[in-house]
Image 1 (tube, helix red, strand yellow):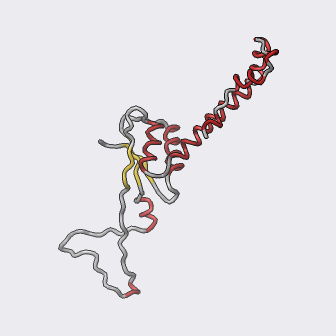
Image 2 (cartoon, helix red, strand yellow; image 1 turned 180 degrees about the vertical axis):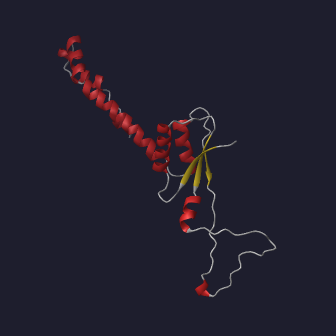
Image 3 (tube, rainbow, N blue to C red; image 1 turned 135 degrees about the vertical axis):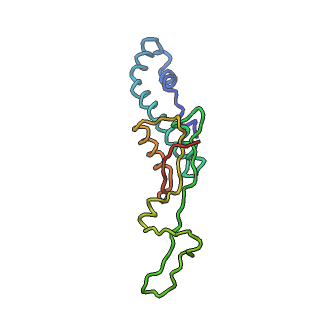
Amino acid sequence: MDKVFNIKLNEYVVHLLPTVLRKTRMVHWLLCQIKPLQELYTKFMALRAEALYKIEHTPQVYSMVNVLNDAFDVGQRRIRIADGVYKSPVYFYEPEETAPVHFYEPAEEKPIYFYEPEELELLDVDFVVLLPQDINLTDAEMIRLRALVDFYRSPDKTYEIRYNDE
């Protein structure tokens, strides 16, 4: 299928020209005429390569790690993705439900903290993008990083970007 897109315009123009008219001046004039077409072809091939790259990569962790390392850490490939921290909510009964309310024994001294659902949404993330300390991203690069993660992640997943302490 790739053969369909490999067009050698310079050779094509020369081969379509009748043998009698294949003089240097005529060939150069025709090559000048197709110069805008060659520029469009180059832009098309770059766009095609970018589209194929996007198609080949998925929201899977290994694929996202490859994309981020290709964009920001080509040489050492140190960007990683780790699982997020989950805080499971504790259900407590309302007084109208007349159910027993025992959250912890005073002897245990382990208090249980209650979170509102809105607070849990802010605390929990599905995954964390870990950047090495010596990669200093500018604001524009950080926006590009967020855009890449937003493009490749599943819509229902939340994430956070942190610098790795290791």
